[in-house]
Length: 270
Image (tube, rainbow, N blue to C red; front, top):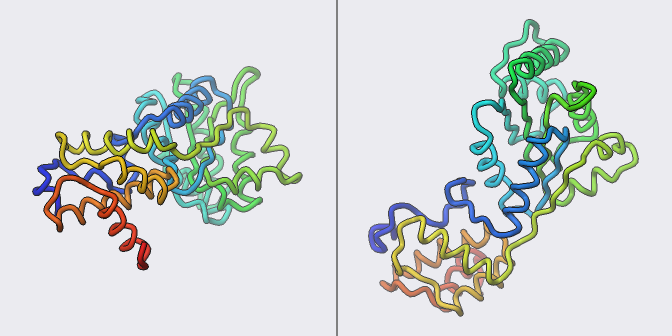
C-alpha cells in the first residue's frame, strides 16, 4: 500500500526469511561463520540457537546459497513427525526414492545416497529447523543418521537449529551421546541499539529508499525498546510504522508513529 508513495521497489520489512535482506551484524556474521566452518570442516553436528525471530532461518537460507552445487542439502522446517515420517521426509528432501515403504528402506536409501555423493567428492548437509520440537526419540534417530563416517571425517553434516529450549533439552543425561557429538555451537543474541538502527537503514536501502522514508532517533529508540533487538519484531513494528506514515502523508518516521504501530500490533494503547 505504501510502496508507491515512498517510491520503494519492494516492502523493506517483510517477516519472511529472505536471505537477500540478511543484515550481517557481528553476531549474525559469527553465527554464519560457525555454520560454514562446521560444515566445510566436516565436524558432524552443529548447533545454532536463538530466540524466536532472531534470524536463524534467514542465516540458514543464506548458508545454503553459499554452499554451492557440490553440497547436497536437505532442509526440514517442521520436525513434528513420527520417526518413520522424519526419515521419509529427509529422504524426499534429498530427492530420493526408496525401494520399500518402511523406515528401513528409507534409511538404506539415505545411506546409499550419502556414500555415493561422498565418492563423487560431494558433501551432504542436513539442516533441521525448530529442532527444539524434536522428541528425545527423534533426536536419537538423528544421532544414528550421523553414524556414517570414515576414520577421518563424518560423511553427513547435521545442523540443529532451534530456540534456547534446544540447549536445555540437550543437557538431559539420556541425550549425552548426541550432546558429545556437537562440536560447533553458537547462540545468536538480539541486536543492540546501534545495530537496530543500522538494521533498519540496511533494509530500507535494499528496498530502494533514498533518504526517505527514514526513522528519526526517537523512533529508532522506541523500535528497539519494543523489539528488544529481535529482527522479526523490528520488521513488524517498522512495517506498521511505514503504514502509519503513509496515512499521515509523511516520510519522517517519528516516535509518535511508532507508538501508533505498537498500539495496532498489541491491540491496546502503547
